[in-house]
Image (cartoon, rainbow, N blue to C red; front, side, top):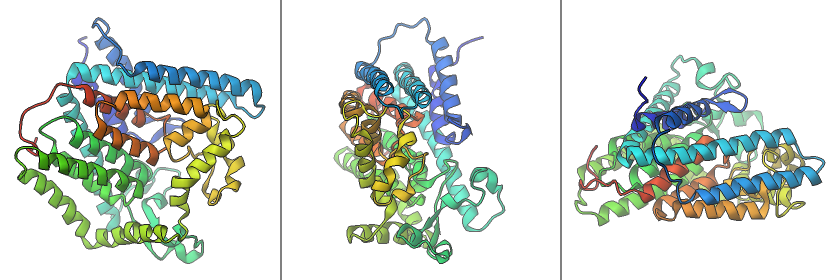
Length: 426
């Protein structure tokens, strides 16, 4: 049997994180299975090929090593430490770190253009599914909602923005008034979909390629807009601004395709149902936040995530409470934080840096920052987008974080650049 090509292998991790965010059973998602298949096939495909680890790998290895040491220290000194959760989380960290190294190796072999083609199709498909489900739900089309929303939430509550409830009104009317539909796709939660699509859009538009896949990028951007997520918009705005600046600086600044993609985004944003939700969930919400009016969700993500991290790390400031022990211990400190009623044992901290500080301490956070700097230093624009994504989502122990890190790092080091004018269609 002939081994699959390197480009074909990339469909597994990229397709997995694009459409496979649902869990098959606790702790294991479809994306995890795809990443495992990728590791196996890639090891078979490249077993006889010479290979040199990426230059940022030593810092990732140092972070992983410190995670083991800090967990051992917490196990020896903290009676509340959960060894079972630590072992599960450490296995995930090593698994995803190995996947990131292998993605880098395969992208180097296949070329950045191949990686961009695969990413364009994979994330455009995921975005297209999200848009189609949004349209179908908006017209009350009959759908298998237990499949669309997940068996645990057959009513699709996660797919709606409850304006009154997000600002402290927990009365019965908050479930009827000011309720706006958001695109959720197969991600299980709109903000999660928005962050993944925002990171994908950054790769599609800002990787050093002179021929960005604008049609696919427009579809991804439209789906991200329809999530009506502040986290997603925090990624979309700098991605689009950086791309616009790149187009303006490049030859051929009057690209009709770039203008067409921008026009498609603007047209969708102006549609009455979209414009109404956009105004209430983004404009009005942001205005209320700036005025100091309560928004428990925004406060917990921006400020509360650090409050929780510091409270958890205070007894072990250098080593943290150990991987896997964030969600085990967070409910103990949540009552000390405003809005702590939102916290349960499934929360991972809302931002990656806060999670790392809480679980591996100050030393772990420094090593983590150095690993990101070493990987992303050659691509400052992509590095900025990735860091914003890390502050918008705390899922360090998930495949999307590590696969995108590998893609962004590879994009910063590639010489595989075509010479078509910026903004041409692909």
